[in-house]
Image 1 (cartoon, rainbow, N blue to C red):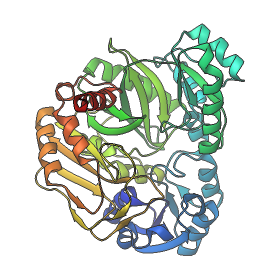
Image 2 (image 1 turned 180 degrees about the vertical axis):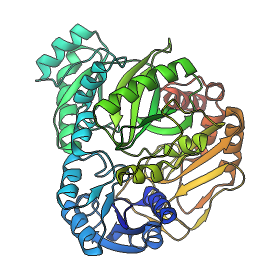
Image 3 (image 1 turned 180 degrees about the horizontal axis):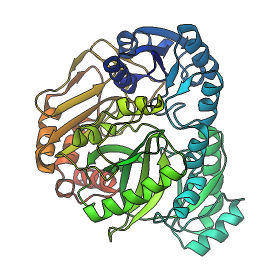
Amino acid sequence: MFKKILIANRGEIAVRIIRACRELGIKTVAVHSEADTGALHTRLADEAVCIGPAPAIKSYLNLAALISTAEITGADAIHPGYGFLSENAHFAEVVGRCGLTFIGPSPEAMRAWGDKVTARENARRYGLPMLPGTGVLKGPGHAIDEANRIGYPVILKASGGGGGRGMRIVRSNEEMRRAFESAQAEATVSFKNPDVYLEKFLEEPRHIEFQVLADKHGQVWTLGERECSLQRRNQKVIEEAPSPVITEDIRQRIGALLRQAIRETGYTTLATAEFLMDDRNNLYFMEVNTRLQVEHPVTELVTSLDLVELQIRAAAGEKLDLPDTRPWSFRGHAIECRINAEDPVTFAPWPGLITEYHPPGGAGVRVDSGVYGGFRVPANYDSMLAKLICHGRTREDAIRRMERALDEFIIGGIRTNISLHKRLLADPDVRAGRMSTRTIERLIAREIEGTLP
């Protein structure tokens, strides 16, 4: 087992990793930018090192600073969390060349599944259901030809990334050239990779993802699925496990295909396979995230597993002692709300000083947070302050508990999206489990329409 882990991240996920390390008896090194001096993760870690100014490119994305800090502090492994360098195969390669362990898949496995085009090829090879799509496009003309073959509407996607960046919905030949150039430019800036590809666009799909865990001894588990349909601009807002619409038959069938694909491609530690579901409950493979997911706590609550601990153990080469490799059985239902520092109406980021902070508590309530009263939220990074996760015996129990917890959550001095979560959970369609990736958009449209004279 590792003796000391450097955490190449910030905020709530850095705190989450520190807690897992503490329970494993592992020392931790927190890195931080000048803007994060005094952040919670720097206070909880055994050591804290400033690695640069506020801009992420000069701190959290600075490979040289991260590696030199690991060497100076005597760390023997680096945990990338999510975001930043977590899916950067070059970073994983550099970490290995420097004699450190990257807590994640190998660079080769990361490239095999992290690149969206290559992942589609792998998924097709192992029989996962696919939407019509393409490989890397050579230019706007090639994109037009392929779109006519597939049939509009289509969606352009960046091969090297995710999070909604480099994505454009296209409905006609006339829109394609501008959309292609825009998507390619954004992909280049965001991921240093201009490659884009096309996929058939589903108008109102559900977004379902499957959690996978593998060790270095050929064992692979699928730990069920998460429902991630409540999104805004391709960014998840609320997640839950299990999905209200996934049957045991679908769970077992997709799980078996995923376990074979992950095992035979030599992938280890955690992975999340993302799917879209159409209105006939057909699943279609979309991509694999080769890292720990933001929404991992809902899976932890319904499986009673510590995914971060298991990820660390797998990276250290341990043979994981889990009961078997069949699809996991669930214990109750869990829901997660992402609490962001943003205006709940305009969604504009809202950095500033937190004057008061009182997280909710009680049975079945968990808060993963990286802030506290008196902390100044910087304007340089993602706006997420905390994740509020509630567990109940049934989905309705979990929703009621979440509503109670949201009422208790006090964050003063800045604006947050807590009121949006309350409105979403009160929506009849959400309550009934009738959701799509356009649910939030429709809710906001109805609210705006209701305010018009």
